[in-house]
Image (cartoon, rainbow, N blue to C red; front, side):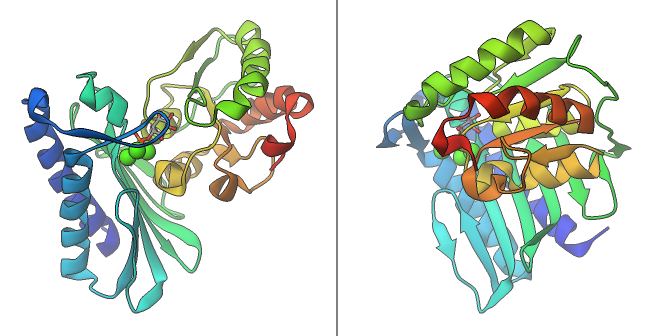
Length: 267
Ligand code: IPD
Ligand code: CA
Ligand code: CA
Ligand code: CA
C-alpha cells in the first residue's frame, strides 16, 4: 500500500472514532457559528487535532490545510494534506447518520492519495493516482450511462452562497425533469464518493471549499469519472463549483448548466 495512504487511512479511522464517541452523546456537544448558516462543533476541532497528530507522527515537515485550523505550515510545501475532519456537520449535530472524514494529499499541486471515511457504515473510499479507486477492499467504477434518463443525481443547495440561489434553482429546474430523481444528502465528500461507487450517476454543487472536494475528486476520477467546473473546465478546486459523474453524465449536466450561469458561476 502507498505509505501516505496508510497514514491517511489511520488518521481518518482515528478521527472516525473521535466522531462516533461524540455521536452517542450529542446533547453534550457545543455548537458555535462561523458565519451565516455555517456551524462548527467541538467535535470538528477535536477530530482535526487527531488527524494532524497522526500525520505529524510520520510527516513532521509536510504542510497541512484543515477546515478548522487553516494552514499548518511545514518546511516542505511540496506535500500538502487537505483535511476536512467532519464533512456533514449539520447532519452530525442533528443525529442524521451521514457524514465523513475527508483527507487528500497533494504533491506539487496534484492529488496523489485520497481517503473519504464514513464512520457510521465503516466504509472507506480511497484512491491513489493512477492506481484506481476502492470501497474498502473492492474496486469501484462510476455507472455506465449515456443519458440523464433514469439517472439519480446528487446535489447540495447553496445554503451559504445565497447569491447563487436563482441560478441554482434554474439549473435544478432543468436537471430535475431530465433525470429520474435527485438527492441532497449533506456531505459533499460522500456525494463524490457515491458517484465513484456508482450509487449516484452524477453530482453538482456550488461554492465548495478544497477540503470538501479534494479527496472525492481523485476518488471519482480514479473510478473512471469526469470532474469539471460548471463550464466544463478545470477550475473547480479554486471556484468550488463542481460537476462530477460518468463522462457522459458530466457532459450532459454541463450542457444544461452553461446557458443558465450567472457571472459568478462561469468559472
Ligand atoms: C458541508 C457539506 C455539505 C455542503 C456544504 C459543505 P461541512 O461541509 O459538504 O454537503 O453542502 O457546502 O460546507 O461544513 O459539513 O464540512
Ligand atoms: Ca464546516
Ligand atoms: Ca465540508
Ligand atoms: Ca467540515
